[in-house]
Every structure is written in structure tokens, then in C-alpha cells.
Amino acid sequence: MSSADSPSARLATRLAFLVAGFGVACWAPLVPYAKTRLAVDERMLGLLLLCLGIGSLLAMIFSGVLNSRFGSRPVILVSGFGLAAVLPLLTIASTPLTLGMSLMLFGASLGALDVAMNNHAVEVERDAGRPLMSGFHALYSTGGFAGALFMTMLLSVGIAPITSLMIGSALMVLMMLAAWPRLLRTNPAEGQPHFALPRGVVLIIAVLAAITFLAEGALLDWSALLITGARLVDVKQGGIGYMFFAIAMTFGRFAGDALIARIGDRRALLWGGLVAIGGFVLLLTAPVAAIAMAGLVLIGLGAANIVPVLFRRAGNQTVMPPTLAIAAITTMGYAGILLGPAAIGFVAKMIGLTLAFWMLPALLGLVPLWSQVVAPRNNGNRQEARGTAN
Image (tube, rainbow, N blue to C red; front, side):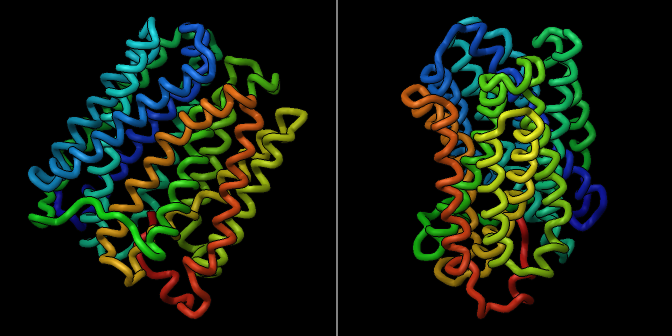
């Protein structure tokens, strides 16, 4: 077992984030295959994706209790190995029912891992005495890029989906085995609540987090269908769009701390929101693949540091205890990323996928509009640059 302030503990945390991002991104290029294999429409696919969200949110509720009782280490191990075990099931499920059940298990593993790895990250960062969260979440983005690239490459050279996912699962198992001895035996305070209804500025922060996560979740689950349906790329290269988005977001997060130290939280929200909106406009009006990819890059760069800033503002506000504010924002944020794509499916059934996607830049418009409320000018750059990023 590692001490909290050590390279070993930081490596274990990064591996946990990497596994989560890699696992969920391996699923993204398989969505068109699942739709074709089961011969379902957008509405039914939206219901199936809802199973993933329900499983994840239910697991988050119980994961909070498990983290309090046993610490984050066993929850990370069970959920991380569980995520690797369930992944191949997503491509062998032959009916909507079996795929829905598999997605619920996959979502439960992901939700439990999300809560536990963030708890572990808080402990490591606290003992380190310096911001580390942005870098940890950058590893999640790195995993997203690597997973999308890995699956796209395997599928493009003709390797069967089941074989591709089994190889991906094996890599995840190896990463979890490397993290296992380095994880901390954390002991959260007894009686500490894991959820609180947000109020005041915390409610605004939570809504903005949910919107930003919703946009990311929509790109994860629907971008392949969006660009292949527009005949911009072949179905075998459907995952390339999310790969470009993930690369841009990873770069933005790695550079985020230094950038925000210079421009402050308010400008990061203002310009980040505007850049992301511009990216969606390019994506949805693109006549060729290159412009669509440029749009996805802009979305990734613009959205990369919105959530880290929102988490920092939640930690600095005085409306409610920061720990409860962060717990509430995490729950609403992940509700957006997991349940939002299902809503896209329902709307797409009625008006088409492209028109449904126009809801995303409209919602993201609230980020620059509320940037002054979330990060007032009079708080000063020193305070804005201080704290923990997501």
C-alpha cells in the first residue's frame, strides 16, 4: 500500500482514470454495429443507452455507502475489473433485452469506478498539497482518445468486434493489476453525507456541469452515427470523430491549469463556452469530413476546462459546505453524461439526429451567459487560480 503523497499513489490514481476513460471509449465505435446487429431505430437505441445511465447512477448511490464503509480501494478494484469483464458482452448480446442488461452492468461498473476514483484522487491531492485533479481527469481523456483510436484501428483492419473488445479488456485488466498494490486504504469520515440538493449558486454550477457533461456524453454515444449518417466517413471509421474530440480535450486539460492561472475562471467559462458552441456549428454544418473534425477539435478545446472551473467554484462558494456542493455537482454532472444521450435518441426519432444535436450548442450558451454569476470579477485572479480542478 502506498502513502498518499507519493508517486506510487499518484500512478494508481492515474491508472484508475485511464481505465475508466479507455473502457467507455471502447464502446463508442461499437454503437453503429449494435444498432445494425439488433435492427433497432434511434428510439430503441436511446432506451438501451438509458440502461447504461440507470445502472451507473444506481451504482453511484450505493458506491457512496461502500466508500464510507470500506474506503475507495476495494470499490476501485471490483468496479475496474468488472468494467473489463462486462465490455465484451456488449458485442455478443443478440437481443435488445440482453444488450440492455449488459449496458446496465457496464454502467454500474463505470458509475462505481467514477465515484471511487474521485474519492481516491481527493485523498492523494490533499496530502500532496497542490492541485492534481486536472491532471487526473486528463488521464480519463487520454483513455478516451486511446480507446477510440484502438477500437477504430482494430475494426478498420477487419478484426471482429468481439475480438477487438476482448483485447481491450485484457489491456484494462493489466492496468488494474498495476494499480492494485499502489492504491490507498482511504477512510472517509464516518457520517459524512455523500449527496445534497444544490441551492443558490451551487444549483447554477450543477446545471452548467450537467449541460457540459451532456454534450460530452452525446458525442461519445452519437458522434459515430452522426458523421457516418451524413456520409462524411465510412462506418468502420466512425470512431475517428470522438477520437479527435478526445485528443483536443486531453490537450486542453493538460494545459488548463497554466491557462486559467493567466486568464481567470470567468474568462475560461466565457471563452470556453463560446469556442465549444462554435465547434458544434462547424460539426453540424460541415460539408466534408475535415470541417467536421475541426468542429470536434474546437468542442474538445472549448469544453475541456469548463468542468474543472465549475468544481473549483463549488469549492470556493459559501452557500453550502464545499464537500456537499461538489458531491451534488458530481451527481448531476454524471446524470447529464449518462442520461442525456438517451434524450438525444428520443428527440432524434422525432426530428432527426442532426436537428437533435442543435440542442447542445443552445444549452451550452448558458455557460458564457452565467459565467459572471459563477465567477464574479471581484473575486480576484489569485482566488480563481486556487483550488482543486476537476
